[in-house]
Image 1 (cartoon, rainbow, N blue to C red):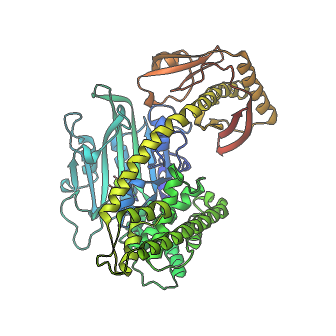
Image 2 (image 1 turned 30 degrees about the horizontal axis):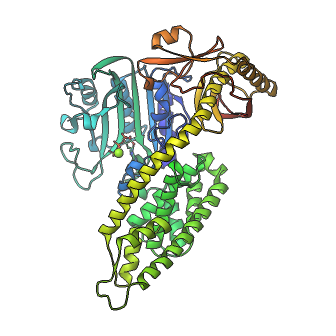
Length: 590
Ligand code: ATP
Ligand code: MG
């Protein structure tokens, strides 16, 4: 079975069980500045897991694009990828454990669906501790499907517990499914430390609320949140040893072969795997609108591309080679992810530019290296490149330490690696201090602008409700120092008349110059006072409600302008579609 087929099967299985199908959210979180990338299918669904009703109902299924930079050190092994796809199904206060486990079991083992060999399956459940009891319900559910007791691991929080995401909030036990990928007979019992038992699926049962006092209270809305790795399961279904042996990677490796001018015998080295992994991740990140740069997501992207280039150089590739590999990624995925084809040209252009720029920097670095080598007199016996020089080559020219060591080796030199690390640490400390100083200044400057745009967002939200109707609800919001971006539910494109009446209403409100009043209250009080807004738990049990006269009243974490006087002139620059039923407005204050 191909990955494309597995993706479709998963979705149609859960559709047949009454789940509504969601599109993958972007890899860049829309409304969460605390993380750089979407790392799991549940991430974009957090508000709904916390209780906000989802417009498509209580049963959801999707295939979510994920990036985990935390797994980068494991990339190259059989099962950890930087970019992967997570298949997931959710129950928002609908079905719970026994049904969720029945779904997982049926999908994995029924011959109508994946038909995996039950004999190679193990599961784990929460063993219980002082906070919460043994998950007997999950244990019994698996037994009822014929999983022998010896193949049901009972493990503690470290393995079988999820959340809360912050200090408090929903959390609960989970059950994980593993498939035996080793050779020969399948072991009688499950061993969580044997990596040949590969985790394929995780069902999380949110049934507790962790309070500020550290107590675990039963939740009113109990949710199920599951995640299955598409690449891992594809490899298993194809009887392959690793994700890299599936059709998802073959065209990528072939493009690499062509760039190297070789014909491969099939087995792929760790370097080849890393190049393939990093290019896949890079292409997907770029398709979601990121270009290489020096901070945040752009920086991660730059590192992925540069790392891939260095690996290629190590393998003896000469000259630019990444664009054809990027092309093979786009071609492999264009059917499932049309955003790849639509931004393909821009992606190739960026990859080409980054590659050329890094090549130039490296060239300068190598010349600089030759200079430091030449500065060491002939008669010196211990030919050592100092830690300071090695660090300068790294810091100024991007020459990674390993490359300096290689170059040195070729000439019978060594490198003072300890000295390099010392210089590196010293530099890090300095830049941390520098960043702290800069941040304060920069923040003070920007915070006024972002607070003003934040307040304008509340005016916009209410104006949209007045012009379009009370069905308008926030779906996302993102503010930079330059503009606001607001996503909301609405079934149709806004007409030019609607756009201009929204603008006029907001500007009339600004002209009134009223104060922005902030009150703290309990969630219940906030709701009964008619406040609108995303009801996200990260604000704690008590919430802030910001009011602007009798015009707007919204639950929000702030910060806001003190009054609407001086916000400036509000103008909508763009109105566009985000997904079915969701529109996006970008606006500025001039
Ligand atoms: P592992 O312990 O194997 O790293 P995990 O506990 O981090 O897995 P979850 O966070 O539960 O995994 O994610 C759900 C599913 O997503 C996993 O069961 C697995 O199939 C898949 N998955 C997780 N991380 C990766 C990765 N880096 N590459 C490919 N698939 C992954
Ligand atoms: Mg992991």
